[in-house]
Structure formats: structure tokens, C-alpha cells
Image (spheres, rainbow, N blue to C red):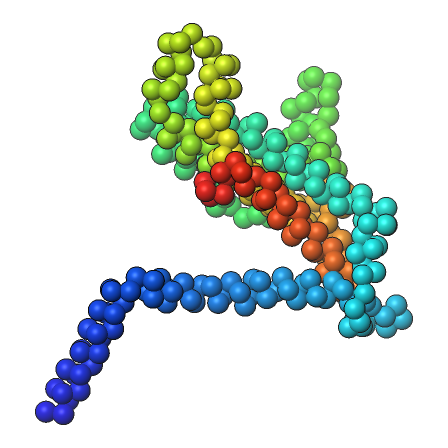
Length: 297
């Protein structure tokens, strides 16, 4: 008897709670978002705060111990030391170059998969584009190291034209990163082109517009937010990468390499260097916000 009463009371509590949540959608949404927001605030924003605070500390030059004294010496060194300035500018340049190359290559590929290929083949083509993402990151990078090495596939293919491969260095880094992040650019452009109304293209052709004019004034404005959305991935992933440049970059260094090399010797300087990609990416997101790219993610 007691068990039945307890069970009935429990059911009544559950019904009242369910009714309360049904009548108050804001409360339901708040409870639903509490856990992920706490995770974001504690682990992500908390780690960024620790990174920023530690960037203002210094290091004892004799013991290499961190001295928790407020100082702006690390940030002053970032802007006054020629090596740091060159590496920062090189890293941003590599990220921009990879983004531009991905956009140039991705657009015709996405146009074919979304508008030209037969409908029954389109899902298979999308799967083929996603297939490289299933392979290991290191496997793909080392495969490019073999391709670009002396006497490798690149040299063999260019030999009939009297040319040779780029070898290891900055061009090899840009080429490898372009291959790695290209699917992230193709997919949003493919989705935008697939949703593009065919009536617009037909109307442009009926009004006498050629292919180039249709592309510039009809297609590109509608697809540009998706291009910008894909650039968020290609730019940020390239800016923070440091393994690829170690494998195929030769003596080239990017921001990630400097962060890695300073972690044990000068942790506050490594933290100061680590804030640079964060600031650059935030500025990049603010710059493309007006294109509507963030709504396409």
C-alpha cells in the first residue's frame, strides 16, 4: 500500500514538473542550455582567460620560472622584435593564401557537383569530397611530404616540362594546407549552389546576360556568404596549424611553432604568442559578419 502511494506521488510530481515546463518555454530553454553554457564558460572561456592573464607574467631569465608579476614586456616584444613580426605576418599571409586557393578551387568543383552532375551522382560526389576527412591528418601530410620530396611524384610529373617540384618550404606548406582544408570550403558552396533557384539563372540568360555576367551579378552575390562561411574554417585552421609546417615547411616557422618552442622555456611569451591567433580570428569574424557568413555556418 505504501509503495503504491509513493509511486502515485512520484507520478504526480513528474506531471506537475512536465506541466510547468510546458507552460514556461523560457524555463525549459534555460534548463536545456545551462549545461553546455557552463561547459563553454568554464572550459573554453576560462582557458582563454587564463591564457590572457598568463601572457602578462614574466619569466626569470636564470631559473626559467614563471614570475607572476604584471608586465606588458611580452606584448612589447611581439611588436618590436623583427622575428616575431615576420612570423605573425607570414602566418596571416599563409592563412589568407590557403583561403583564396580553397575558394578558387572549390567553386568550380561545387558548381559541378551541385548544378552539372546528374542528381543520382551528386550524393556520391559529396561522399567522395568528404572521404579525405576520414583519413588521418598525419597520413595525409606525410603523403604530401613524399609527393613533394626530391625525386617524388611532383618532380616526376613536372620533369617533361623542364620543371621541378616546389620542394619543402612555404609553397609546400600552402599547398598541403589547401589540400587539407579544401572540403570545408567545398561543402558550404555546394549547399548554396544547390539551393540557388534555377529560375534566376534562366531569367538572366533570357535577358541576354552572358555566363560571366550571370556569375558576377546573380550567382556570386548569393553564394558569397557561403564562401565567407567556408573561409572561417580554412583561415582559422591554417592560422593555428603548426604540424604541417614542421613536416613539409623546411625551415619555415609559423605562430604555432613559436608557441610550441616557448612552452617550456618561456610560458608567458608562449601565452602572448597564443593570443595573436585569437585576436586575428576575432577580427576576421567581425570583418565577415556583415556578409551573413555566420548565419551560413
